[in-house]
Amino acid sequence: MPIRLATNCTNCNNFNNDSTCAQHNIKVTERHTCDSFDMKATLKNNLNCGTCVRYQTATCPHPTQAAPEMLCSSWAPRAVA
Image 1 (cartoon, rainbow, N blue to C red):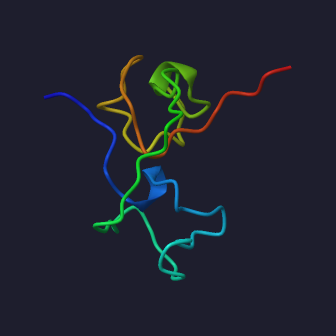
Image 2 (image 1 turned 90 degrees about the vertical axis):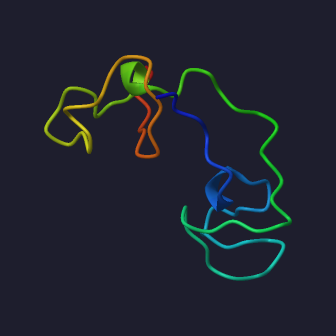
């Protein structure tokens, strides 16, 4: 089964860092989407388990499914010195 980016508020250009929608002026989560959805133009291809700080640790939310190229909404970047 392929994994894809969701068409939800967290992947929309109208999503603000404070979890509000700039289009509708309300708080939103990854469970929300609307007809005004506008996918962010710049998506990075390196957002996967292999580049996640939680991969193969006790804090991984999906330890039995996690794989190096899998995408996850709980992705956390590794520190870069």
